[in-house]
Amino acid sequence: MNKAFFKFLFDNNFEALRNYLYFRTGDKDLATDIAQECFLKLWEKQPSGDAATIKKLLYKIGHDLFISYYRHRNVEKNFIINQNNSNATSLSPEDILNYSELEKKYKKILKEMPENYRVVFLMSRTEELKNAEIANLLGLSVKAVEKRMSKALRLLKSALIENK
Image 1 (cartoon, rainbow, N blue to C red):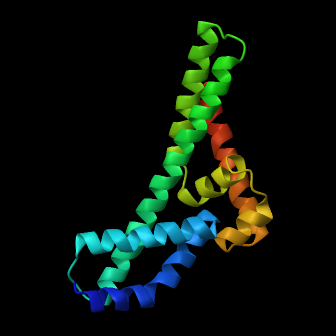
Image 2 (image 1 turned 90 degrees about the vertical axis):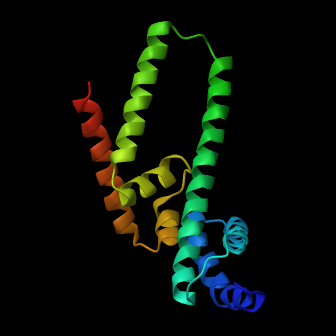
């Protein structure tokens, strides 16, 4: 890959890639940072192929970087929550075990949940976004977000009740 081809790819794909990432993240600055990192990784990889093939690779890199960012952010949040909980009143060993088991079930259920339900659920519960904000970010109607949220909650509830 030469500089001219890379510049061509950048000029023709940066804006669309950033918009895709903006809809995923809801943060324009973060989307810009991830899009720039995608092109950096593309330059490091020096893949061969035509523009269409490399465009697909760019979106794959963008998706992977977004997932990595999202997971890292969840780890940070969990660390902060755990730090705050350790300063709270002491829990009995039984309480800690019950909480640990419940947390494992919750994570397993989330992992098995269809992605469109999981995304809406996590945006609502972890990012504390309103349905209208989620709908705007995902390009859906508010009704569609409400429906997905309702189905996610039903799946979560039924799975937790089943596993008691």
